[in-house]
Image (cartoon, rainbow, N blue to C red):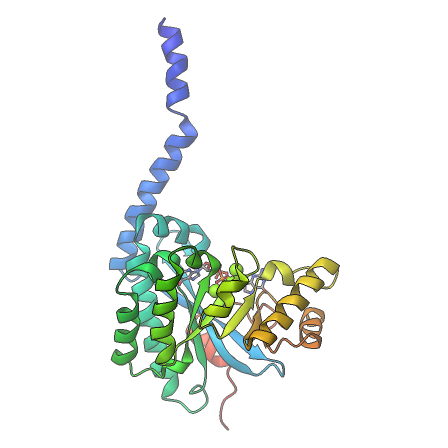
Length: 278
Ligand code: C2E
Ligand code: MG
Ligand code: MG
Ligand code: MG
């Protein structure tokens, strides 16, 4: 009898599960501390045009953990999206990005750079999202045309009319929208036409084997020509080789982001990539 229930206990308390719950609790606690103690940091990855001139950057969050060092967003963004902490963290990202844009606006060599931020579905769907963006823009006197909001297709799963209204309000003051990881999610061509988008961002999974995989070639080609006929600009992410960039250029893509140009780096390193005025 005892042996039997002992076995059952093993079933109910899977040690692996227990560890992951403990990790989760520790992680959640540490993330709250991280917010209080300013342990988040934005890295910047340059975006270039077809002559490799920097035209902007994507802000990518990092967690500067006192013991673990730099933690990738892939390790904590999914959890903070689940717990709702993404709202506070997202607010911090918006504020930091606008502060950075204000600093760039002060110097002639950085004044025209755009800055893209990633906004998750939960954040976008909050009732006060539009106000939060507007407030930050006002606070830092940001030129709204230089702020780009990257949304993924997962944002578009909710009430499309509300989404369009929110996007229109922000687009009306000049803010740009880019559809991130394009081609990997749920996409309705019907929506693409209705949304006030400025840019499609070709997902890096199509770019990675672009030079060896003819299916990827076809997909990339199709995305670019579709974007062109919808009047949208295209940026390719995950560009690592010159051959990939050459193929993309040959198909009409004019904006690029990837390790070929730079990895995401802290602000000082990013600014050293920008040509200085003599
Ligand atoms: P994402 O927005 O699609 O960002 C592109 C990711 O690809 C970044 O990973 C970037 O470092 C990486 N990458 C860029 N170029 C290359 C390349 O040439 N080769 C390879 N292998 N990778 C490249 P990262 O920084 O780890 O960010 C991962 C994801 O985390 C982002 O994907 C985004 O979904 C999310 N994320 C990052 N920052 C934020 C944020 O502030 N808010 C939210 N909600 N999500 C964020
Ligand atoms: Mg992105
Ligand atoms: Mg992306
Ligand atoms: Mg991606």
